[in-house]
Length: 204
Ligand SMILES: Cc1cc2nc3c(=O)[nH]c(=O)nc-3n(C[C@H](O)[C@H](O)[C@H](O)COP(=O)(O)O)c2cc1C
Image (cartoon, rainbow, N blue to C red):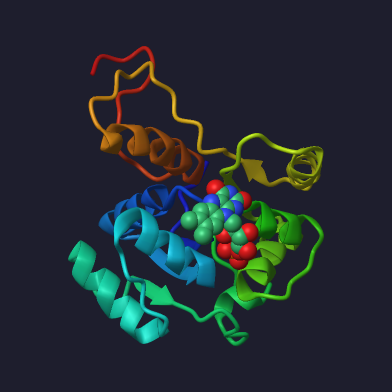
């Protein structure tokens, strides 16, 4: 598997914002170019779960995250919710892969039905039609038949459904260890190197 060099990352308003924020941190630390999108409810959840105020304006968001992660300037591009001239909106300039993390049942449903009304939905639709990697990290409990059918539909279209289901066999000592379990699996599927947790069958 060749490693993705440009990744579209979307945060939506599901619980699990620490997964998305940690993923962004790891991608930038690996020198990967990230196109970041987030929904309005993602801003509410970031505030509620992490006391993080995600700026509404794209330029402010870039400065905010570069500062927050002490990231190399120029790697991160943030796009507004309806910025239709963003590269992610077109099949002529797609990223190598896209991750929606955390992913709400609402966004999952919109992607499964090809709604394309918001930039996040359009970017995901572009990945499917261009046969690029699309990873969705849903968080809901329990799943209804509608949720399960939408996930099956997306999986049949080639998307990877990677639910935020941390294991406990690595004996987590902190919430960070639990978050890293999920983020490590996402990075594995993107082909991005990491040492977040020991691999099964290898010494820690
Ligand atoms: C604090 C909070 C937590 C939420 N957690 C979830 C969740 O875990 N899963 C989910 O599917 N929706 C969750 N929701 C509901 C979604 O945010 C809501 O359906 C929203 O319309 C989704 O919009 P979006 O996909 O554009 O972010 C939550 C909402 C809030 C405010």
